[in-house]
Amino acid sequence: MDLLYKIFVDPFVQMGTSPDLLVQTLWDGLVAGVLYSLIALGFVLIFKASGVFNFAQGIMVVFAALTLVGLHQHGTPPPPEAFSEFRIGLDHVAFGCPDRAELEKWMRRLDELDIVHGGIKDAAYGSGLSFRDPDGIALELFAPPA
Image (tube, rainbow, N blue to C red; front, side, top):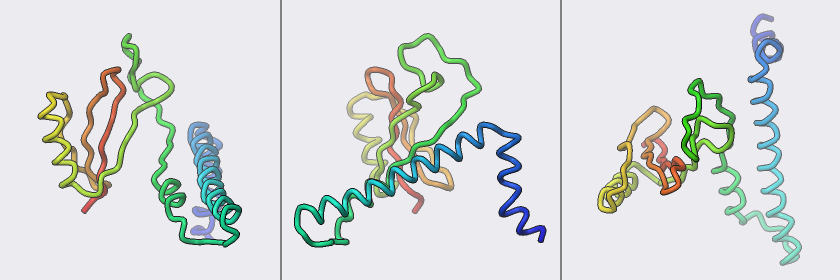
């Protein structure tokens, strides 16, 4: 019975005491619904255009699967620059790479162009290479773990 409580009741109790968890959960549900609707829209578009119900429309599924939106609260106050990931709004934009070797190619290319970057950072969930565009917006190239 204790296991059922931990699975079905305790998460809602925690949400009541932590409003940010409730907002994040609601946001995650909204984003998941949007992603499902993108996949459904792909099915409808293919069917309306061809008259055939085609499951081989992987690009809509890939787009939905590679979309990540999350809420994050920084403890650092924003600096006076025009863009800062510490302000409310955009934190950074990330682009996927197939593997760490591709990240290393990008790092060499950034070095060739004299673009300052943070080097490749490895973590259990993957590897990332961070830098900024000319407007100061944080950009990231990310590869899943090997």
